Image (cartoon, rainbow, N blue to C red; front, side, top):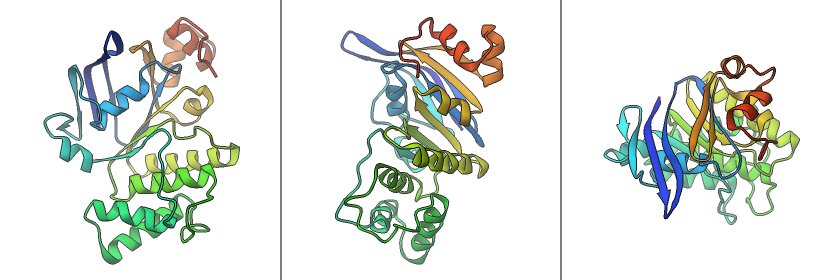
Length: 243
């Protein structure tokens, strides 16, 4: 479970995140939805300890992102926007390397990689060198690396960016399976259809602040809109960035 309390972050005179609070439960998918530049990625980067908040805090399974950074890192899996992979290694070797970094070895690690290859539908290319992989294949390898240590919490920063329709459908299926397995999944997106298809709870972010939050049905009801898309437009007060 992830609990965010009054997080704020500035870069010079720019207030990227302003007093943001929300929670994300186990066994649910929580979406951070907002226009490009709304502050979604900055929120995630604070959660996975790359950025230090100016004020406020967050806990992941009870561990504070600042005081307990090492424990936080062991309890999360992160797919960053534009995550790269090692092209001289096979898909299996890429995932095994990250498993080694988490202290995993031997048959237990090999079994975990096989599980991920099945979960993410990677069996056809798990032994291939990753140079020349499609964007969808590269994203699956990066996600497998993030999941190799079986983290309870998964943070995904625009995971379908640059994917074609079939690769997007495959990744959505994998994310849904994580939810079914009891994981806490948080992902950022500016794509309405993606969030509508996956999320149990939605946090709408605009100009660094939370404009609205709740389930899709709650957002529609609270804004008096007819559709989730209309609810989003009403919440942010603009159609800028809507896709």
